[in-house]
Image 1 (cartoon, rainbow, N blue to C red):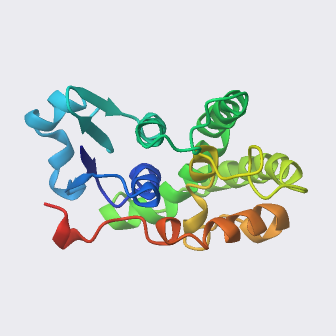
Image 2 (tube, helix red, strand yellow):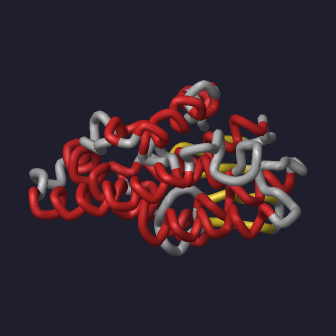
Amino acid sequence: MKLYWSDVLSPRKACAVAKYLQSPVEYAYLDLARGEHKTPEYLVLNPNGKVPTLVDGARTLWEADAIMCHLAARADSGLWPQDDRQIEVIRWLSWDLAHFYRSGGTLYFEYIIKQRFGLGSVDPVEVKQATDEWRRLASVLDGHLRDRHWLVGGGITIADFAVAATLPYAQRAHIPLDEFPNVRRWHDRLSELEAWRDPFPALAAAA
């Protein structure tokens, strides 16, 4: 398998799951500043011109959540459960992509990506809207996690890797994580995993 990645938000999920599962993955780093995700060769693999992309034999997958599912299924891992919990995992994946990831991702873009790639100054209107929305959604998540260690069932699943994606950047992206103690506690538990704390492969090893 070959995983095309860069050290930005969405690939972090796929890289974390690959590392957690010790998947037999060859990593291929794409330099976004140089437009390596927009080359004709890469667009054949991922016509969206985004990262990550996974190539596994004849199958090519884009979208980080699908890649996480594939890696877990390939490893026969409970990260992608094959029972009634699967519906709950899908629910949280959908909620995240439609709502939570969008608000946190906006703050990540405004405070981190703009500075990194020279895309202009922080937009206070966007920040205010995204912060208000993030707080509203975080209150839903905080309530769900009140008596839970993980999002679904009694163990970690890809739902945890997905929904927590923006939280490692909370301080830099001005995400008010500390206002929500159950979300904070849950993310602290996730951060005990080396694969979550340090998901990206060393660039020297990523050919």
